[in-house]
Amino acid sequence: MQSKILIVEDDQVILRFLALALKTNGYDVIDARNGLLGINLFISHNPDLVLLDLGLPDIEGMEVIKEIRKISDKPIIIISARDRDLDKIEALDNGANDYITKPFNIGEVLARVRVSLRGIIKINENKTFVYSDLTIDFDRHKVFVEEEEVHLTPIEFKILETLVKYQGKVLTHKFLQSETWGYETVDNYQTLRVFIASIRKKIEKENRINQYIITEVGVGYRFNDE
Image (cartoon, rainbow, N blue to C red; front, top):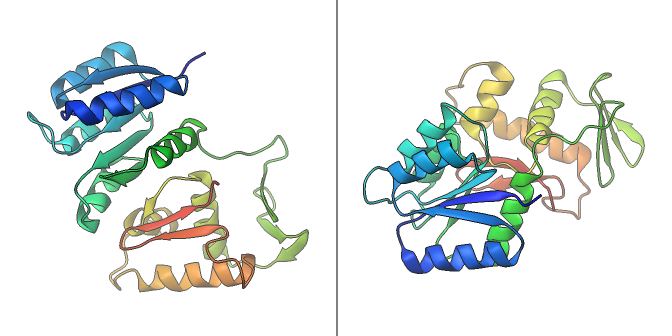
């Protein structure tokens, strides 16, 4: 069954380019050239994923995210010329799953689409997560690298568990702090950075940068999905 993708984009050249690439790769595509139509098409067609521009002619893309999030948790990928960290953080905090800046590589867009459509957390019937040399046993709160157990503190385990749960999704500093501590710290995310560094030291090989946890500069982190 084909996955249905809604493109909300007012630039007709970009819209046609995206639609052609997606159709060529087997996706069913519907499109809207403004935000209000995009919201209506989402409600009436229930697509599996949304590609959304932020600079729309009628309403801001941020408002489109908020309206969709009131009724659905379907993946939303932002494709925008706005490259400020603040814009990325705002979009992700409002509920977007990913953020791609223009001009973009269509191969990257297609890869991000595939990742988002795979859904969250891949746990087998034994409630374990396996990725490359890393194994996480959620029931026993144990972590193994190349079948050798490594010790994570409760907070480190919670951070890693959250990253894995949303594998491939960019998680902002604010979101990770909220999920871990239940509130946002006031140290400019330094405490979170310290814990991330500690987790990396324990689970990643010294010669493998971004083996598992990838830094999205100025925004947050995501767990590798490639």
